Amino acid sequence: MVQLTENENKKGTQKRDYQVVIQKVSKSFSKGSRDVKVLEDINLHVKKGEFVSLLGPSGCGKSTLLKIIGGLLSSTSGKLSINGKEVNSPSKSIGFMFQKAVLLPWRTVEQNLILPIELSQGDISKASERIGELLELVGLKGYEKYYTKELSGGMQQRVSLARTLMTDPDILLLDEPFGALDEFTRETLNFSLMDIAEKSGKTVVLVTHNISEAVLMSDRVVVMGINPGQVLENIFIDIPKPRTDQIMATKEYADYVLHIRKLLGVGR
Ligand SMILES: Nc1ncnc2c1ncn2[C@@H]1O[C@H](COP(=O)(O)OP(=O)(O)OP(=O)(O)O)[C@@H](O)[C@H]1O
Ligand SMILES: [Mg+2]
Image 1: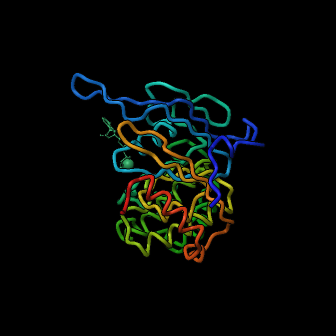
Image 2: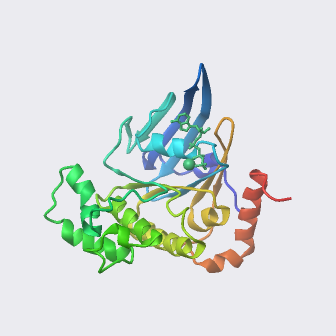
Image 3: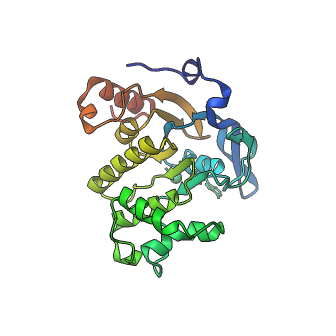
């Protein structure tokens, strides 16, 4: 198994190649009269087009870190820069997708998809063409006029993914996007997401609880520890792409999974 530290992997990589740079980011929340440190000294450099998964126990601060990257939450200390610029508010180059589809049930699929363009007061004249392309991409062509309440949970998450892509963000921040779905639907959507990421070259930061899914999908798995949330190890997954489920039968895949299980103290 090829396992590189982040520093080793940086050899030959220039600073400008990194799209998301997180330096010594910490976050505390006040609980009653005391401050509780949720994230401590997080360092993370993500390259353009890289697919990174954040993996760790419940409560280790994955969602908090994603919200900080997305500018939805400010850090207590440390620096965040995106495309070389320091940021502390939501950036246009970022698309955020939450665990539960936040769709408007009184709007049709196409009306939900157009929402981010309306909110950013963008040009809606070209929207219908883009809606068609995106629905094709997520496998929902023909559902433009359906109300979202008429769709299954998996279909709603597909709409949610399409809506995240609507403004063509460079960076996708996905917080357990398919976590609430059954295994079959989740796997299918994972493969759709991998295709989209590979074809578009978008940078993806995905929060997941699922070790095998993280290894299958990612260029790198960032394993986090808890109390306070911290990066335990960066594991670069050196398996060629595009990946199919065939790789799940290989020894190198099993070695990555076992290594991460050990790090997280899973199994016996
Ligand atoms: N707004 C908030 N105010 C106070 N504490 C918070 C807030 N948001 C998160 N926390 C605390 O921060 C810690 C990390 O929460 P976070 O939601 O980031 O964890 P997580 O790794 O995403 O967990 P899960 O896997 O269960 O989604 C938890 O202890 C939580 O109670
Ligand atoms: Mg979370």
